Amino acid sequence: MTASTPAKWGLRGLAFGYLGLLLLAPVGMIFYKTFEHGLGPPVEAMTSPEALHAIQLTLLMVAVAVPLNTIFGVGCALLLVRRRWWGNSIVDGIINLPFAVSPIVVGLSLYLLYGNTGWFGPTMAEWGIQVLFSWPGMVLASIFVSLPFVVRETVPVLREIGTEQEQAASTLGANGWQTFWRITLPAIRWGVAYGVVLTTARVLGEFGAVTIVSGSISGETETMPLFVAKAFEQFQEEAAYAGAIVLALLALTTLLLMSVGGRKAKASTTKEGF
Amino acid sequence: MDAHPASTPPVSAAPRAGIRLPGVGVGLGRGLVVLYLSLMVMLPLAAVVDASLSKGLDAFWSAVTGDQALAALKLTVVCSLIVVAINALFGTIIAWVLVRDEFPGKGAVNALIDLPFALPTIVAGLTLLTLYGAKSPIGLDVAGTRVAIVVALCFITLPFVVRSVQPLLMEMDREMEEASTSLGAGGFTTFRRIIFPNLLPGIVAGVMLAFARALGEYGSLILITGNLPFDTEVSSVFIRSQIESGNTAGAAAVSVVLLALSVLMLIAVGIVAHRGARR
Image 1 (cartoon, each protein chain N blue to C red):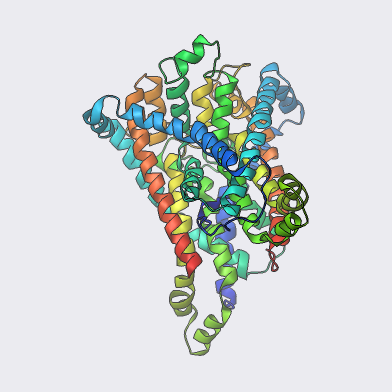
Image 2: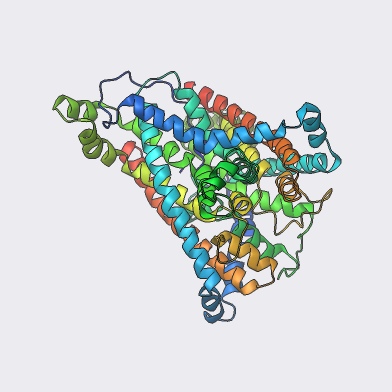
């Protein structure tokens, strides 16, 4: 149906108006607010010891949670797609769970496991391992909330590429690892990369779950999102905006990678492309 | 572009064997996968369910039906319902414009749709507060009201319906529409009888994913809603306040209710996606 001209412009107006008011205007506004008085104040706010520590800690979350979830994700996707097993549908269902769980509930669950009166808390305290109000707890929270992405993005690509090439490699005498490194991984790399980008974005921005398990101690257990929230609540608007801009720029980079990676993932598996 | 891929059809048709997997052994690999999932996801959730029942079923029930808990739960569900209705309408319109319309910068607009998935929720909240808060430059202050909850939830759930309707629109056979028009049907009739029924599965799946997401949202709400009990306190904020005042059993009980609602949504999405895949 080629919509008549007034209808076309009406729909365009509604779509652009909605996106403009909800997405573009607020995000533009925050950029304006941050750089209202030039580059100086935001740069100064971001180079304070607290801010630098928050950036470091956020990167640590990414450095631990993303590789773990990526290895798990690829391995799990291989087993789900390439091997028939009665437990596959159960595993598949459980992998979706983190999408359905409120971040606050994730935080509560870790608190109940590793807190003073939790299931493992007392024993771990005896061993001298501090999980809650420390980075291990925050890593666990990050892993939980970002767990599904790599699996979800890899499974369809794996199914799409089929098994002919892998079978050929096996017939020619390649062992499992050789087949994986030389055939499978190159074929699924864009799907995996897309999943990694989504995982990273989620870990960078996680707030609710981390806020519960971290205690949000300045200069100790404060990631960037926590830093932004605290700065705002303490009326340090400049620091809050500057932190938000850093995260927003990371999000825009993610978006760019997503649109490139998503297109490549689709193009490498389907004929029609996106 | 499916950034919320719970809508992929379930895994069932795996080939029997024949391909060698990396040499850790299928049994060991499977064991590791199950162990990782148990440690990272199942055990924590089991602790929540356990804590919710730690004082018995009666305590669970009274925690969930307490005045403040019930008010928060009602507010959460009602706001989420309003939000998915808005999403169903505008998500479909945006998807339509992105697929059927041609305009310069279409690729950029298409990429922008995913911004709410990429932007940290706390930044989303701060962003909305800057434009629609007390210091609003356009004189529109909704901070501390229920409208703010709806606005924030609309922001974070925007991509779901768009992304689940888009592929259906692209696949749709235009011949049916042309036939309908050539038989004398007007634009609206064609939409109602031909286009809408074809898009419905996508709209339903998107709405359910958005609903599940909206139920548990926290980060984008805390700065802008004021978190006032009985007024603008949603369930996730209520749970947080219960944790802070030491009532973990009560917090866990409300968590279980939220969890159950969201899981039901996901299962329903799975069924819809499965049906769609078979059709």
